[in-house]
Length: 74
Image 1: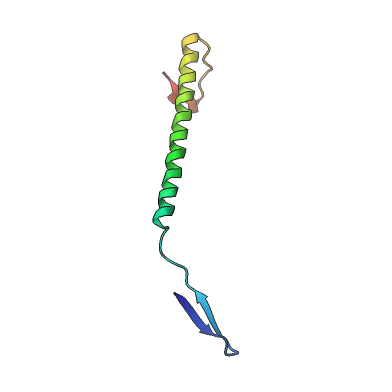
Image 2: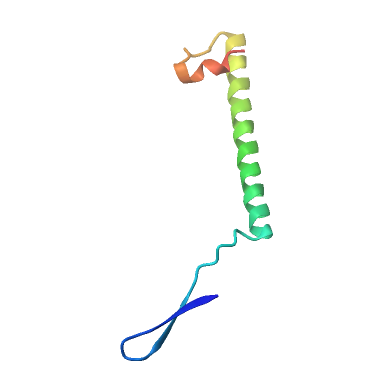
């Protein structure tokens, strides 16, 4: 689809109109797969941090918790 206009010197100008269609199904699936991968990696990282903290608590070497780390309590 395109728009056209005529310039003052009589030359016809054609401008493509932007597509209003969303991403293709393939692009959408690819984006979802990337998000799922990032979420699972983040969950894995959080699990390992919590496991390390719990081990440190067991052996008596746990560091003091900041407000951000309160969720780590075993």
